[in-house]
Length: 154
Ligand SMILES: [Cu+2]
Image (cartoon, rainbow, N blue to C red; front, side, top):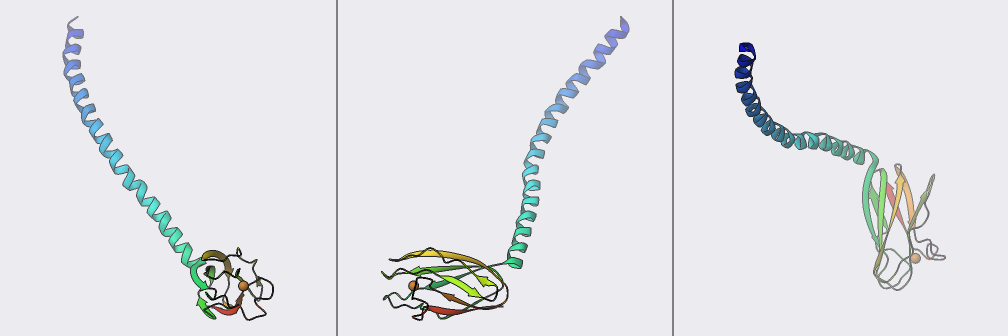
């Protein structure tokens, strides 16, 4: 009997202490939770860094080319250059004549981009090793009429 009472007397403060501790523990948990997102952000940043590192290694450059706005069978730029890797060329065509863009040279012979006109744009993404390529409009007759350019990849 005395022993139980003693235990109860000891247990009560302990329980209160435990409650107090668990209260603090709850705060600690929430602050831990608050610290967890930064910890999660750190790996995410690492992943982003990895992606960023991968992107330059793979190239990932972007180029813009315009079709002659007056409707001539020509690009306004006849030379382009970029670094090796995945290259995205955005063709803009302000004329009413439909055009597209494709790249060929060496082992590369890309399918053409969408054929566009009237101020639209079309993207062509090609994986290009270093070398010299021709970009051209694949609409029949256009490349033969001079709608080509030289793309140098280093
Ligand atoms: Cu064309």
